[in-house]
Image (cartoon, rainbow, N blue to C red; front, top):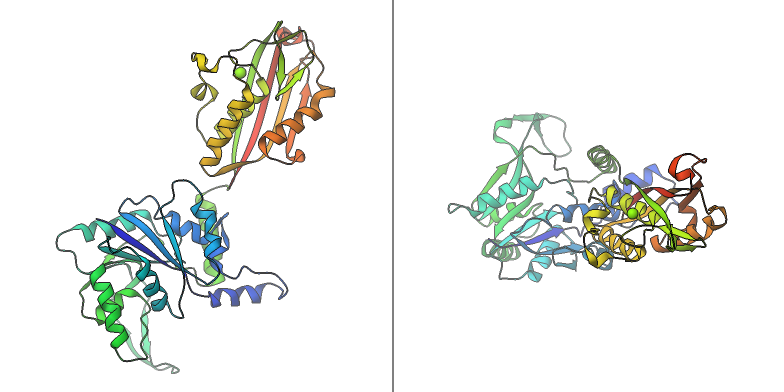
Length: 405
Ligand code: MG
């Protein structure tokens, strides 16, 4: 089963903007669309797209965005492992935006899914349930995610206050998205809409198909799938995500110890120290870089340096540690993270590290693409105690904070 996904994100978000204006001073600069507001550290629209990125049946994504916002989506598309995404400028109404996006989808996909850009919390499991229903032989032309209505709903005439009726909620469900349609039925329903009487605009695509006479069916679920319309909705979703993802940042620690022997070059943080001895090791034995590598790997629970650069593998013999660091940084970035801060401590009796701390810090900052005041390098001796105190050891500790790119 192959599906074209349409994300309807062409609206102006006027109710959201109105909420912001009430809350802030009018001189503040607001992003022109709520879609690019950071929801627990990630733009809202990126979160919406991420919910669909792992679903194999979805072959392409076409998104209707406010005019001029197409280029802002590059932040999502340039990350590896993303599905193909095409942006089109939205129309005056939701129906118009979806129709424009539909024309850009490939006819090779027999099913079309439509989802609100402003529903970033939809559960992957609910989307899969919808697809599973469509894959069965008896599938209708239209399927939609829906929820049983819990509140008591009263019917009143517009502008009036007299209650006409209390609707029996056992007959009521709330329509959500995604909604899934056979392509032929959706395309035909748009043609019917164009020839139908003016003055009716569908608020979802399923009602368009119902009106054109196609059977529709609900798939009910009970996960939270709010449409972020007001500022209050946004704040609630933000708090919900922050609770589910305790901290936006990731933290990793690392340590490394090397014996020091005569006649080896002594590299620390990529800097060659003047010394008659240096670390014994399979690689160049740069204990500071090794500790840092373990901190970076640890922050993403990827294992340790030995899992990546085994000392059993001759390929890594005398390998410059800074090359290993570059490889690990590449891996971290590929997963969508970057170092935001590091702190390190070096325990070394001789040579005294004091004169080299600044150059080591500068070097690490350059490797990590960080400002120097985000890189800590601290030096300690072993206070003359044990093997370290005899000048036979170097020991390093590192702490790394990673942040989403
Ligand atoms: Mg080591």
